Length: 535
Image (cartoon, rainbow, N blue to C red):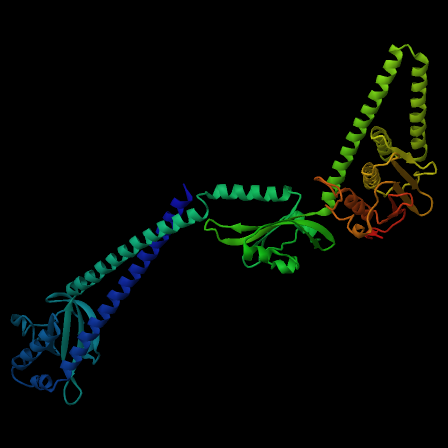
Protein backbone atom coordinates (compact mmCIF):
# COMPACT_ATOMS: atom_id res chain seq x y z
CA UNK A 1 0.00 0.00 0.00
CA UNK A 2 1.37 3.43 -0.94
CA UNK A 3 2.27 5.99 1.70
CA UNK A 4 -0.33 8.45 0.41
CA UNK A 5 -3.11 5.87 0.77
CA UNK A 6 -1.88 4.88 4.23
CA UNK A 7 -1.87 8.51 5.38
CA UNK A 8 -5.41 9.08 4.10
CA UNK A 9 -6.74 5.91 5.77
CA UNK A 10 -4.95 6.58 9.07
CA UNK A 11 -6.02 10.24 9.26
CA UNK A 12 -9.61 9.44 8.25
CA UNK A 13 -9.83 6.55 10.73
CA UNK A 14 -8.54 8.67 13.60
CA UNK A 15 -10.80 11.55 12.58
CA UNK A 16 -13.85 9.27 12.38
CA UNK A 17 -13.06 7.79 15.79
CA UNK A 18 -12.70 11.25 17.32
CA UNK A 19 -15.87 12.56 15.67
CA UNK A 20 -17.96 9.55 16.71
CA UNK A 21 -16.62 9.73 20.26
CA UNK A 22 -17.19 13.46 20.56
CA UNK A 23 -20.60 13.19 18.89
CA UNK A 24 -21.68 10.50 21.34
CA UNK A 25 -20.39 12.47 24.30
CA UNK A 26 -22.03 15.65 23.03
CA UNK A 27 -25.35 13.84 22.49
CA UNK A 28 -25.20 12.29 25.95
CA UNK A 29 -24.41 15.63 27.58
CA UNK A 30 -27.11 17.42 25.57
CA UNK A 31 -29.87 14.91 26.37
CA UNK A 32 -28.85 14.76 30.03
CA UNK A 33 -28.85 18.54 30.37
CA UNK A 34 -32.17 18.81 28.53
CA UNK A 35 -33.81 16.21 30.76
CA UNK A 36 -32.40 17.94 33.85
CA UNK A 37 -33.81 21.24 32.62
CA UNK A 38 -37.24 19.71 31.93
CA UNK A 39 -37.27 17.97 35.33
CA UNK A 40 -36.22 21.16 37.17
CA UNK A 41 -38.81 23.21 35.26
CA UNK A 42 -41.54 20.71 36.18
CA UNK A 43 -40.45 20.76 39.82
CA UNK A 44 -40.35 24.57 40.01
CA UNK A 45 -43.79 24.85 38.49
CA UNK A 46 -45.11 22.21 40.91
CA UNK A 47 -43.59 24.05 43.89
CA UNK A 48 -44.99 27.37 42.65
CA UNK A 49 -48.49 25.94 42.28
CA UNK A 50 -48.25 24.28 45.71
CA UNK A 51 -47.54 27.70 47.28
CA UNK A 52 -50.44 29.47 45.61
CA UNK A 53 -52.99 30.57 48.28
CA UNK A 54 -55.90 29.79 45.97
CA UNK A 55 -54.80 26.18 45.67
CA UNK A 56 -54.26 25.82 49.41
CA UNK A 57 -57.66 27.31 50.26
CA UNK A 58 -59.40 25.14 47.66
CA UNK A 59 -58.51 22.05 49.64
CA UNK A 60 -60.97 23.20 52.36
CA UNK A 61 -63.79 23.71 49.89
CA UNK A 62 -66.53 21.11 49.34
CA UNK A 63 -65.53 20.71 45.66
CA UNK A 64 -61.83 21.64 45.30
CA UNK A 65 -61.62 20.70 41.60
CA UNK A 66 -63.91 23.58 40.60
CA UNK A 67 -61.25 26.05 41.78
CA UNK A 68 -58.09 24.10 41.09
CA UNK A 69 -58.83 22.76 37.58
CA UNK A 70 -59.16 26.14 35.78
CA UNK A 71 -56.06 27.54 37.45
CA UNK A 72 -53.71 24.64 36.69
CA UNK A 73 -55.01 24.15 33.14
CA UNK A 74 -54.20 27.77 32.34
CA UNK A 75 -50.69 27.27 33.72
CA UNK A 76 -50.26 23.94 31.87
CA UNK A 77 -51.05 25.56 28.54
CA UNK A 78 -48.57 28.36 29.24
CA UNK A 79 -45.67 26.03 30.06
CA UNK A 80 -46.62 23.43 27.43
CA UNK A 81 -46.67 20.62 30.02
CA UNK A 82 -48.42 17.36 29.26
CA UNK A 83 -50.33 17.47 32.50
CA UNK A 84 -50.62 19.16 35.88
CA UNK A 85 -52.37 17.02 38.46
CA UNK A 86 -53.31 18.20 41.95
CA UNK A 87 -54.43 15.54 44.44
CA UNK A 88 -55.09 15.17 48.15
CA UNK A 89 -53.22 13.00 50.62
CA UNK A 90 -55.17 9.96 49.50
CA UNK A 91 -54.07 10.55 45.87
CA UNK A 92 -57.53 11.61 44.65
CA UNK A 93 -57.20 13.98 41.71
CA UNK A 94 -58.61 17.52 41.86
CA UNK A 95 -57.29 18.35 38.39
CA UNK A 96 -56.32 16.52 35.21
CA UNK A 97 -56.11 17.36 31.47
CA UNK A 98 -58.71 14.67 30.93
CA UNK A 99 -61.65 15.83 33.00
CA UNK A 100 -63.13 12.32 33.20
CA UNK A 101 -60.20 11.29 35.34
CA UNK A 102 -60.77 13.98 37.98
CA UNK A 103 -61.79 12.32 41.25
CA UNK A 104 -59.89 9.20 40.46
CA UNK A 105 -56.75 7.99 42.18
CA UNK A 106 -53.31 9.19 40.96
CA UNK A 107 -51.05 6.49 39.44
CA UNK A 108 -47.28 6.04 39.33
CA UNK A 109 -46.58 4.94 42.87
CA UNK A 110 -44.13 7.74 43.69
CA UNK A 111 -46.23 9.83 46.10
CA UNK A 112 -44.67 8.43 49.26
CA UNK A 113 -41.69 10.83 49.58
CA UNK A 114 -43.91 13.81 48.67
CA UNK A 115 -46.37 13.03 51.44
CA UNK A 116 -43.40 13.08 53.78
CA UNK A 117 -42.68 16.66 52.73
CA UNK A 118 -40.07 16.14 49.95
CA UNK A 119 -40.10 17.71 46.50
CA UNK A 120 -38.93 15.16 43.91
CA UNK A 121 -38.23 14.62 40.22
CA UNK A 122 -39.08 11.17 38.98
CA UNK A 123 -39.82 9.06 35.94
CA UNK A 124 -42.92 6.96 36.09
CA UNK A 125 -45.78 5.62 33.96
CA UNK A 126 -48.86 7.66 34.59
CA UNK A 127 -52.33 7.61 33.13
CA UNK A 128 -51.07 9.36 29.95
CA UNK A 129 -47.99 7.17 29.58
CA UNK A 130 -44.31 7.31 30.65
CA UNK A 131 -43.38 10.80 31.79
CA UNK A 132 -40.80 12.94 33.55
CA UNK A 133 -42.53 14.60 36.46
CA UNK A 134 -41.84 17.11 39.22
CA UNK A 135 -43.80 16.70 42.44
CA UNK A 136 -44.18 19.07 45.38
CA UNK A 137 -46.27 18.83 48.62
CA UNK A 138 -49.09 21.28 49.44
CA UNK A 139 -49.03 22.53 53.05
CA UNK A 140 -51.84 24.02 55.10
CA UNK A 141 -51.44 26.93 57.52
CA UNK A 142 -50.03 24.61 60.16
CA UNK A 143 -47.37 23.13 57.87
CA UNK A 144 -49.21 19.88 57.47
CA UNK A 145 -49.09 18.12 54.05
CA UNK A 146 -52.62 18.17 52.70
CA UNK A 147 -52.00 17.42 49.01
CA UNK A 148 -49.70 16.83 46.06
CA UNK A 149 -48.97 18.82 42.89
CA UNK A 150 -47.52 16.82 39.96
CA UNK A 151 -46.30 18.50 36.74
CA UNK A 152 -45.35 16.07 33.97
CA UNK A 153 -43.84 16.01 30.47
CA UNK A 154 -44.16 12.83 28.41
CA UNK A 155 -40.86 11.06 27.74
CA UNK A 156 -42.08 10.56 24.18
CA UNK A 157 -41.99 14.34 23.64
CA UNK A 158 -38.59 14.59 25.31
CA UNK A 159 -37.24 11.79 23.10
CA UNK A 160 -38.57 13.58 20.04
CA UNK A 161 -36.64 16.72 20.94
CA UNK A 162 -33.53 14.58 21.68
CA UNK A 163 -33.87 13.00 18.24
CA UNK A 164 -33.78 16.46 16.69
CA UNK A 165 -30.55 17.21 18.56
CA UNK A 166 -29.14 13.82 17.55
CA UNK A 167 -29.90 14.51 13.90
CA UNK A 168 -28.10 17.84 14.13
CA UNK A 169 -25.10 16.19 15.75
CA UNK A 170 -25.02 13.59 12.99
CA UNK A 171 -25.16 16.22 10.26
CA UNK A 172 -22.41 18.25 11.89
CA UNK A 173 -20.31 15.11 12.33
CA UNK A 174 -20.71 14.16 8.67
CA UNK A 175 -19.75 17.66 7.54
CA UNK A 176 -16.70 17.66 9.80
CA UNK A 177 -15.77 14.17 8.59
CA UNK A 178 -16.09 15.26 4.95
CA UNK A 179 -13.89 18.29 5.60
CA UNK A 180 -11.44 16.05 7.45
CA UNK A 181 -11.28 13.58 4.54
CA UNK A 182 -10.59 16.44 2.12
CA UNK A 183 -7.90 17.74 4.48
CA UNK A 184 -6.38 14.26 4.81
CA UNK A 185 -6.15 13.99 1.03
CA UNK A 186 -4.49 17.41 0.80
CA UNK A 187 -2.05 16.55 3.60
CA UNK A 188 -1.17 13.20 2.01
CA UNK A 189 -0.57 14.83 -1.37
CA UNK A 190 1.53 17.57 0.23
CA UNK A 191 3.65 14.98 2.05
CA UNK A 192 4.04 13.03 -1.19
CA UNK A 193 5.25 16.15 -2.99
CA UNK A 194 7.63 16.98 -0.16
CA UNK A 195 9.30 13.57 -0.40
CA UNK A 196 9.28 13.65 -4.22
CA UNK A 197 6.82 10.79 -4.54
CA UNK A 198 9.10 8.31 -2.77
CA UNK A 199 7.83 5.50 -0.58
CA UNK A 200 9.23 4.89 2.94
CA UNK A 201 11.21 1.86 1.75
CA UNK A 202 12.77 3.93 -1.02
CA UNK A 203 13.58 6.74 1.41
CA UNK A 204 15.22 4.25 3.78
CA UNK A 205 17.25 2.77 0.94
CA UNK A 206 18.33 6.24 -0.22
CA UNK A 207 19.36 7.16 3.33
CA UNK A 208 21.44 3.99 3.64
CA UNK A 209 23.04 4.63 0.25
CA UNK A 210 23.73 8.26 1.17
CA UNK A 211 25.46 7.21 4.40
CA UNK A 212 27.56 4.65 2.54
CA UNK A 213 28.51 7.21 -0.11
CA UNK A 214 29.44 9.82 2.49
CA UNK A 215 31.64 7.39 4.38
CA UNK A 216 33.30 6.12 1.19
CA UNK A 217 34.32 9.62 0.05
CA UNK A 218 37.84 10.52 1.11
CA UNK A 219 36.79 14.10 1.75
CA UNK A 220 35.30 15.78 4.77
CA UNK A 221 31.68 16.80 4.19
CA UNK A 222 29.64 19.10 6.44
CA UNK A 223 26.15 20.41 5.68
CA UNK A 224 24.31 23.24 7.45
CA UNK A 225 20.81 24.68 7.22
CA UNK A 226 20.00 28.32 6.58
CA UNK A 227 20.51 29.11 10.29
CA UNK A 228 24.02 27.68 10.27
CA UNK A 229 23.10 24.58 12.28
CA UNK A 230 25.07 21.47 11.33
CA UNK A 231 22.80 18.82 9.83
CA UNK A 232 25.36 16.37 8.49
CA UNK A 233 29.02 15.44 8.95
CA UNK A 234 30.79 12.33 7.72
CA UNK A 235 33.52 10.37 9.49
CA UNK A 236 36.39 11.88 7.47
CA UNK A 237 35.26 15.37 8.47
CA UNK A 238 35.43 14.34 12.14
CA UNK A 239 38.98 13.07 11.56
CA UNK A 240 40.10 16.37 10.04
CA UNK A 241 38.42 18.22 12.91
CA UNK A 242 40.28 15.90 15.33
CA UNK A 243 37.04 14.77 16.94
CA UNK A 244 36.19 11.24 18.16
CA UNK A 245 34.82 8.94 15.48
CA UNK A 246 31.51 8.56 17.32
CA UNK A 247 31.13 12.30 18.01
CA UNK A 248 27.82 13.86 17.00
CA UNK A 249 28.07 17.49 15.92
CA UNK A 250 24.62 17.59 14.32
CA UNK A 251 22.56 20.32 15.96
CA UNK A 252 25.57 22.48 16.81
CA UNK A 253 26.20 25.84 15.20
CA UNK A 254 28.89 25.70 12.53
CA UNK A 255 30.84 28.46 14.28
CA UNK A 256 31.29 26.14 17.27
CA UNK A 257 32.85 23.52 14.99
CA UNK A 258 34.76 25.63 12.42
CA UNK A 259 35.12 29.23 13.66
CA UNK A 260 36.54 30.65 10.43
CA UNK A 261 34.06 29.07 8.02
CA UNK A 262 32.42 30.97 5.16
CA UNK A 263 29.30 28.85 4.93
CA UNK A 264 27.21 31.76 6.25
CA UNK A 265 28.29 33.77 3.21
CA UNK A 266 27.32 30.92 0.88
CA UNK A 267 23.84 30.74 2.44
CA UNK A 268 23.46 34.51 2.18
CA UNK A 269 24.67 34.94 -1.41
CA UNK A 270 23.78 31.55 -2.88
CA UNK A 271 27.10 31.52 -4.79
CA UNK A 272 29.45 28.54 -4.77
CA UNK A 273 33.16 28.69 -3.95
CA UNK A 274 35.58 26.07 -5.26
CA UNK A 275 39.19 25.14 -4.52
CA UNK A 276 39.64 27.64 -1.69
CA UNK A 277 42.41 27.08 0.83
CA UNK A 278 41.88 27.41 4.57
CA UNK A 279 43.24 26.17 7.89
CA UNK A 280 41.23 23.75 10.03
CA UNK A 281 43.09 23.14 13.25
CA UNK A 282 46.58 22.12 12.16
CA UNK A 283 45.45 20.96 8.72
CA UNK A 284 45.81 22.91 5.49
CA UNK A 285 42.77 21.97 3.44
CA UNK A 286 41.27 22.73 0.05
CA UNK A 287 37.57 23.57 0.40
CA UNK A 288 34.58 23.57 -1.94
CA UNK A 289 31.39 25.27 -0.75
CA UNK A 290 28.07 25.06 -2.58
CA UNK A 291 24.55 26.24 -1.63
CA UNK A 292 21.60 23.88 -1.23
CA UNK A 293 18.73 25.13 -3.40
CA UNK A 294 15.18 23.74 -3.20
CA UNK A 295 12.60 23.35 -5.98
CA UNK A 296 11.50 26.95 -5.43
CA UNK A 297 15.04 28.20 -6.07
CA UNK A 298 15.41 29.17 -2.41
CA UNK A 299 18.68 28.62 -0.55
CA UNK A 300 17.96 26.24 2.32
CA UNK A 301 21.52 25.62 3.46
CA UNK A 302 25.05 24.89 2.26
CA UNK A 303 27.45 21.97 1.91
CA UNK A 304 31.20 22.16 2.37
CA UNK A 305 33.63 19.47 1.22
CA UNK A 306 37.28 19.71 2.18
CA UNK A 307 40.39 17.61 1.73
CA UNK A 308 43.79 17.80 3.35
CA UNK A 309 46.39 19.42 1.13
CA UNK A 310 48.91 16.81 2.24
CA UNK A 311 46.91 14.15 0.41
CA UNK A 312 46.71 16.33 -2.68
CA UNK A 313 50.46 16.85 -2.51
CA UNK A 314 50.95 13.11 -2.13
CA UNK A 315 48.93 12.47 -5.28
CA UNK A 316 50.86 15.17 -7.11
CA UNK A 317 54.13 13.61 -5.96
CA UNK A 318 53.08 10.18 -7.15
CA UNK A 319 52.06 11.56 -10.53
CA UNK A 320 55.30 13.51 -10.76
CA UNK A 321 57.30 10.39 -9.92
CA UNK A 322 55.50 8.35 -12.58
CA UNK A 323 56.17 11.12 -15.10
CA UNK A 324 59.86 11.16 -14.18
CA UNK A 325 60.16 7.40 -14.60
CA UNK A 326 58.40 7.59 -17.97
CA UNK A 327 60.68 10.42 -19.10
CA UNK A 328 63.74 8.51 -17.92
CA UNK A 329 62.73 5.38 -19.81
CA UNK A 330 61.93 7.40 -22.90
CA UNK A 331 65.25 9.23 -22.72
CA UNK A 332 67.18 6.04 -22.14
CA UNK A 333 65.42 4.33 -25.04
CA UNK A 334 66.06 7.29 -27.34
CA UNK A 335 69.73 7.60 -26.35
CA UNK A 336 70.50 3.91 -26.74
CA UNK A 337 68.61 3.80 -30.02
CA UNK A 338 70.99 6.43 -31.39
CA UNK A 339 74.02 4.51 -30.13
CA UNK A 340 72.73 1.30 -31.67
CA UNK A 341 72.27 3.07 -35.00
CA UNK A 342 75.88 4.30 -34.85
CA UNK A 343 77.20 0.84 -33.96
CA UNK A 344 75.10 -0.70 -36.73
CA UNK A 345 76.50 1.78 -39.26
CA UNK A 346 80.10 1.14 -38.20
CA UNK A 347 79.63 -2.60 -38.57
CA UNK A 348 78.11 -2.16 -42.01
CA UNK A 349 81.13 -0.01 -42.98
CA UNK A 350 83.34 -2.80 -41.62
CA UNK A 351 84.85 -0.36 -39.12
CA UNK A 352 84.93 -3.01 -36.47
CA UNK A 353 87.64 -1.43 -34.33
CA UNK A 354 85.71 1.86 -34.05
CA UNK A 355 82.55 -0.05 -33.16
CA UNK A 356 84.34 -1.96 -30.41
CA UNK A 357 85.89 1.23 -29.05
CA UNK A 358 82.48 2.98 -29.00
CA UNK A 359 80.88 0.06 -27.20
CA UNK A 360 83.71 -0.12 -24.68
CA UNK A 361 83.59 3.64 -24.06
CA UNK A 362 79.81 3.68 -23.53
CA UNK A 363 79.95 0.62 -21.30
CA UNK A 364 82.74 2.16 -19.20
CA UNK A 365 80.94 5.46 -18.77
CA UNK A 366 77.66 3.80 -17.91
CA UNK A 367 79.21 1.18 -15.69
CA UNK A 368 81.25 3.75 -13.81
CA UNK A 369 78.20 5.92 -13.21
CA UNK A 370 76.04 2.97 -12.15
CA UNK A 371 78.76 1.59 -9.87
CA UNK A 372 79.17 5.01 -8.26
CA UNK A 373 75.42 5.21 -7.65
CA UNK A 374 75.29 1.70 -6.21
CA UNK A 375 78.27 2.39 -3.92
CA UNK A 376 77.50 5.88 -2.65
CA UNK A 377 73.72 6.10 -3.06
CA UNK A 378 72.47 2.56 -2.37
CA UNK A 379 68.80 3.52 -1.93
CA UNK A 380 67.09 2.00 -5.04
CA UNK A 381 64.45 4.73 -5.41
CA UNK A 382 66.93 7.61 -5.26
CA UNK A 383 69.54 5.74 -7.31
CA UNK A 384 67.00 4.85 -9.99
CA UNK A 385 65.89 8.48 -10.13
CA UNK A 386 69.46 9.74 -10.65
CA UNK A 387 70.20 7.20 -13.40
CA UNK A 388 67.02 8.26 -15.16
CA UNK A 389 67.91 11.94 -14.87
CA UNK A 390 71.39 11.20 -16.20
CA UNK A 391 69.95 9.51 -19.29
CA UNK A 392 67.46 12.36 -19.75
CA UNK A 393 70.31 14.89 -19.60
CA UNK A 394 72.18 12.95 -22.29
CA UNK A 395 69.12 13.19 -24.50
CA UNK A 396 68.82 16.95 -23.89
CA UNK A 397 72.52 17.40 -24.74
CA UNK A 398 73.39 18.96 -21.39
CA UNK A 399 75.90 18.00 -18.75
CA UNK A 400 74.55 16.39 -15.57
CA UNK A 401 77.21 15.66 -12.97
CA UNK A 402 77.04 14.20 -9.51
CA UNK A 403 79.84 15.43 -7.29
CA UNK A 404 82.25 12.52 -6.74
CA UNK A 405 82.39 13.47 -3.04
CA UNK A 406 78.66 12.78 -2.71
CA UNK A 407 77.53 10.12 -0.25
CA UNK A 408 73.95 9.33 0.67
CA UNK A 409 74.20 6.08 2.56
CA UNK A 410 73.03 7.08 6.05
CA UNK A 411 69.38 7.88 5.37
CA UNK A 412 67.22 7.53 8.53
CA UNK A 413 64.49 4.90 8.42
CA UNK A 414 61.79 7.44 9.30
CA UNK A 415 62.66 9.63 6.31
CA UNK A 416 60.02 9.17 3.61
CA UNK A 417 61.80 8.08 0.40
CA UNK A 418 58.97 9.43 -1.73
CA UNK A 419 59.51 12.89 -0.27
CA UNK A 420 63.26 12.69 -0.90
CA UNK A 421 62.59 11.64 -4.51
CA UNK A 422 60.21 14.58 -4.87
CA UNK A 423 62.83 17.02 -3.59
CA UNK A 424 65.74 15.71 -5.67
CA UNK A 425 63.74 15.10 -8.83
CA UNK A 426 62.06 18.50 -8.91
CA UNK A 427 65.30 20.37 -8.12
CA UNK A 428 67.04 18.60 -11.03
CA UNK A 429 64.08 19.22 -13.37
CA UNK A 430 63.97 22.87 -12.42
CA UNK A 431 67.76 23.20 -13.00
CA UNK A 432 67.53 21.50 -16.43
CA UNK A 433 64.73 23.80 -17.51
CA UNK A 434 66.76 26.80 -16.34
CA UNK A 435 69.88 25.88 -18.39
CA UNK A 436 67.82 24.99 -21.46
CA UNK A 437 66.25 28.45 -21.34
CA UNK A 438 69.71 30.07 -21.55
CA UNK A 439 71.53 30.17 -24.89
CA UNK A 440 74.91 28.84 -23.77
CA UNK A 441 77.34 26.42 -25.37
CA UNK A 442 77.87 24.63 -22.04
CA UNK A 443 74.70 23.67 -20.19
CA UNK A 444 75.61 22.28 -16.79
CA UNK A 445 73.64 20.85 -13.88
CA UNK A 446 75.53 19.66 -10.82
CA UNK A 447 74.25 17.73 -7.81
CA UNK A 448 75.91 17.29 -4.47
CA UNK A 449 74.46 15.11 -1.70
CA UNK A 450 75.97 14.23 1.65
CA UNK A 451 74.86 12.50 4.81
CA UNK A 452 77.81 13.58 6.93
CA UNK A 453 76.90 15.22 10.21
CA UNK A 454 73.42 15.49 11.66
CA UNK A 455 71.66 16.59 8.45
CA UNK A 456 71.08 15.30 4.97
CA UNK A 457 72.35 17.98 2.60
CA UNK A 458 71.17 18.23 -1.02
CA UNK A 459 72.68 20.92 -3.23
CA UNK A 460 71.68 21.43 -6.85
CA UNK A 461 73.26 24.11 -9.03
CA UNK A 462 72.93 25.20 -12.62
CA UNK A 463 74.42 27.83 -14.91
CA UNK A 464 71.04 28.90 -16.31
CA UNK A 465 69.22 32.21 -16.30
CA UNK A 466 69.03 32.54 -12.52
CA UNK A 467 66.22 33.95 -10.38
CA UNK A 468 65.70 37.74 -10.43
CA UNK A 469 65.67 39.30 -6.96
CA UNK A 470 62.24 40.89 -7.50
CA UNK A 471 60.56 37.46 -7.75
CA UNK A 472 62.73 35.64 -5.19
CA UNK A 473 59.92 35.55 -2.61
CA UNK A 474 57.39 34.11 -5.06
CA UNK A 475 59.21 31.16 -6.64
CA UNK A 476 57.81 28.66 -4.12
CA UNK A 477 54.19 29.77 -4.56
CA UNK A 478 51.96 27.21 -6.19
CA UNK A 479 51.17 28.17 -9.78
CA UNK A 480 53.83 30.90 -10.01
CA UNK A 481 56.29 30.48 -12.88
CA UNK A 482 58.40 32.67 -15.17
CA UNK A 483 57.91 30.13 -17.97
CA UNK A 484 55.06 30.15 -20.45
CA UNK A 485 52.46 27.41 -20.71
CA UNK A 486 50.02 25.53 -18.54
CA UNK A 487 50.77 23.29 -15.54
CA UNK A 488 53.72 25.46 -14.48
CA UNK A 489 54.75 26.62 -11.00
CA UNK A 490 54.22 23.25 -9.32
CA UNK A 491 57.71 21.73 -8.91
CA UNK A 492 59.21 24.11 -6.36
CA UNK A 493 55.92 24.24 -4.49
CA UNK A 494 56.08 20.44 -4.12
CA UNK A 495 59.72 20.70 -3.02
CA UNK A 496 58.86 23.21 -0.29
CA UNK A 497 55.97 21.04 0.91
CA UNK A 498 58.13 17.89 0.95
CA UNK A 499 60.93 19.70 2.83
CA UNK A 500 58.36 20.88 5.36
CA UNK A 501 57.06 17.33 5.82
CA UNK A 502 60.60 16.21 6.58
CA UNK A 503 61.04 19.13 9.01
CA UNK A 504 63.91 20.62 7.01
CA UNK A 505 64.50 23.92 5.27
CA UNK A 506 65.48 25.12 1.80
CA UNK A 507 67.54 28.11 0.66
CA UNK A 508 68.80 29.38 -2.68
CA UNK A 509 71.34 31.94 -3.85
CA UNK A 510 72.92 33.09 -7.09
CA UNK A 511 75.65 30.94 -8.64
CA UNK A 512 78.89 32.96 -9.22
CA UNK A 513 79.13 31.53 -12.78
CA UNK A 514 75.47 32.30 -13.43
CA UNK A 515 72.34 30.42 -12.50
CA UNK A 516 71.07 29.36 -9.09
CA UNK A 517 72.18 27.08 -6.26
CA UNK A 518 69.41 25.43 -4.20
CA UNK A 519 70.37 23.93 -0.84
CA UNK A 520 68.16 21.64 1.22
CA UNK A 521 68.96 20.54 4.77
CA UNK A 522 66.95 17.73 6.36
CA UNK A 523 67.65 16.72 9.97
CA UNK A 524 68.30 13.04 10.54
CA UNK A 525 66.74 13.19 13.98
CA UNK A 526 63.57 15.19 14.43
CA UNK A 527 60.47 15.30 16.58
CA UNK A 528 57.15 14.69 14.93
CA UNK A 529 54.97 17.73 14.69
CA UNK A 530 57.77 20.20 13.87
CA UNK A 531 57.34 22.30 10.76
CA UNK A 532 59.85 22.87 7.97
CA UNK A 533 60.57 26.36 6.76
CA UNK A 534 61.91 28.45 3.97
CA UNK A 535 65.03 30.44 4.75
